[in-house]
Image (cartoon, rainbow, N blue to C red; front, side, top):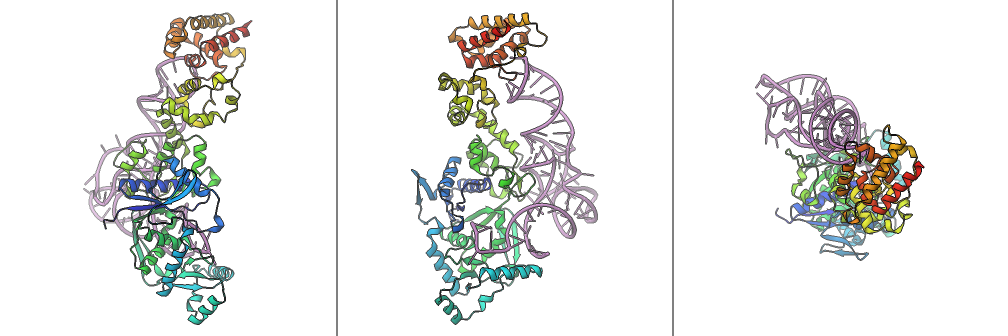
Length: 496
RNA sequence: GCCGCCAUCGUCUAGCCCGGUCAGGACGCCAGGUUUUCAUCCUGGAAAUCAGGGGUUCGAAUCCCCUUGGCGGUACCA
């Protein structure tokens, strides 16, 4: 009853981390942290056909990047996969002998049996059943084989699987932490395969064996496993084991409410990282898809630590949640605003490096000091890191623009020239050491009087070549005195 | 088909367990303000007859029943 809480994240290594998997892991993590439990990472690599090289490394890397550190199981150390903990091995592919032993135990106590039916026959049987509007279920042909027949077939090396012998009487029910009581009629349960003909266990079997052997107390997983849970429970019963507590999480949905899929957009955590979403924003966002602190709490932005404090598995919803990028964007912008310029700079470098306009820029525009100035201005305008510099390429490139853009409202050419000369005089009079946005603003405002547009608009265009840009003071500050004066000269040259 | 789960603004949701404020917040959207443009920021607004229909009750989003719709499962995938 007071056993130490142990949860596991048990992904199959298919190559990338699905957003849904991230949320499951996050809930595992939050639940473990909140309750002082242990969080185990176990790799469910029982499907050899789906083996993807490098998937495990990628998986661990992504989880660690997200900050969801586990305590036990499979880790990555200096690029190498290592296993830590007293319940290993943590790769199911390395536990084959264990599954074999337990499967044998079930055969010995008549809770499982050999099945020699071919896949073609099974398929044909299923088709007939469906045609007859019956539920597709194994017909137990092999359950009735005599001991001699079984021995003979095994002797001859015939391929076989091992099936769980379901107890068809009565019903099986369990108490789901999220859904409450769920009950299934046993007569509807299928004699599912627990050991495949290649000697590997199915997820349906390995999951039960490992959760028990690893002393998992709470099985937190996706809703898609609800209907197989009664079979797992029968397995626990057949062994005389106590089942863990179950918590089945609601699904993540596309905007059309179908299960979140690749076809309708990016589903991999890595995709969002590459697009410049901060891990904190992704975690925060995904945490609220299917859960909410409730009780009138209206806080939206939560750090991982705050999530640990507020999290409650019982408050997780039952209904699926649509994955709404707009809210992710907003959250990401919030997190970007909270960054220090140093942090923003560090995180932005790789994104700058992806831009042609940046790579083509002169060296003095790639310095740390210069980029930090650019980022200071952009911080409030960024939705994600990948758009860094994108809206203000004039910080990096030479500019060109039509002369007409320089005019503010109904200004004449003479007035425009005066305006630009005026700006030039003001800027020329400011010492390099006083070159701050605050001081620039003070001096420019003083020179502009109450007709700010007449002075500031031409200056903006002269400095940026664009109609939409940060303020002229900010532009001048980033560009520096020399470049600003130079760009003013270029503007004046257009009037000649 | 069969089994199971679910159902509050467009979206994420609070409220539901312990019936009784104009059903609250956030994103998005619209309008206004700040402002030299953009963004930020501030203010305001539209937005759910609480899926529909029956009950129970003085009173139901909240309790009960039915219907509908959506989703999941029904593999030698997980």
